[in-house]
Amino acid sequence: MTEPGALAPTDLDVRDAPPPGLWQRMKADPQYAPEYLALEAVTRIGPQAAAWVARMRAMYPNMHPDGLAQLAVKRFRRHARFTGAVSGSVGLPGAIADLATLAWTQSRLVLHLAAVYGVDPTHPDRATDLLVLQRVHKATEAARLALGVAQGREGVGAALAKGVGTTASRAPVGRALGRLSWKLAQMAGMRAVRKVAAKAIPFAAIIFGAWANSSTVNDLASRAINLYRPPALTAVPHPRPASQ
Image (cartoon, rainbow, N blue to C red; front, side, top):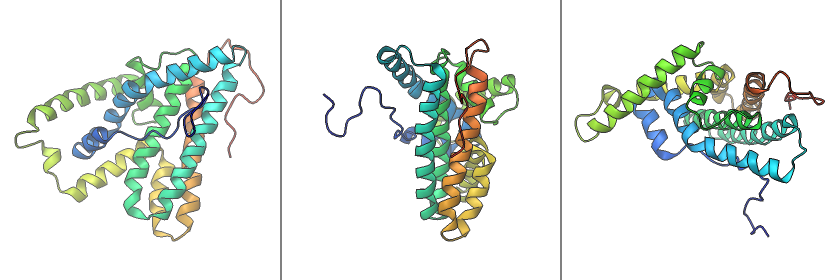
């Protein structure tokens, strides 16, 4: 029996947030924030996605992959809508944190969809997929190159942590946060940029934040399903996420 407040075996935990260590790396080196997030997501979320799909298939062996995909989209879309509304109520200071949370939620969705359609969510290539699906990079090779650079910079940053630090860490805080917000907005979707601008409009930011987050999740889900869904898979009604 599931303990009160615990997740049932079939539940999809959407509450996970970017780990503090990732947040610090992105703030220190905002130029490669999307790459850091993609790498961390595959390492941290990939096994969770594989485990969830395995549980669902064991409990519901006849469940069509499209149905399971829609379940994941619905859960993550609902979570994104809620966090978007909350961030809209706290004004501009919460915008950057919400962009990071939205990009993290989107990454979790993509990795779960990969697992649903039989693609290994723990493989390093999924980080490349994330950057291309989220339109941070237009081509696979560019994404792979950026990931390699980010991994190298992370190693250098760790080595210099006790010394003078990197150029990025010495940059003015305002400029660094501005660059970080732009890179995360780029990763989360251009609607997220307009959402940040809407922070200046009282109350409207709450509604717009929820809509923008939900829309970006829908858009990304469609692209991910198109990428991972086997062409030969027999269709079921409404295999694509419906806008809500």
